[in-house]
Length: 101
Image (cartoon, rainbow, N blue to C red; front, side, top):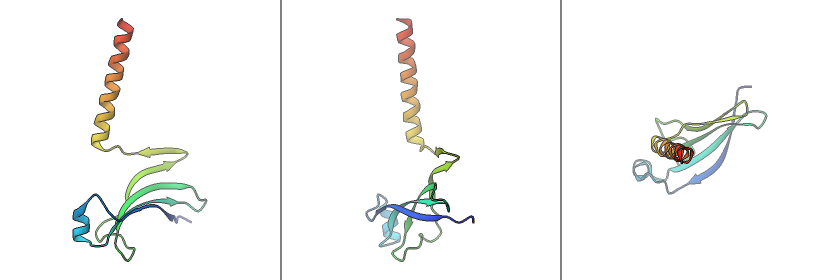
């Protein structure tokens, strides 16, 4: 009880972060799901792993999505959040302009 199973969903040997490869040659970018004992996905994580399969020293998997009670939670990155808020503001303004017309 209390244990999770890792299911790798993507491996990217050519990471967008060359500094990772410079410091840790042969490392890979990994995206994985952790599933509970019933097979339910609990979270999605990203990490860099060494050729021996271990996580890069001093690092831990970075949670990207969390699933709880049927709901999915996602932490937006700052740039994506600013873009979404700007689009929502523009749509809201467009809606107000349509009402005034």
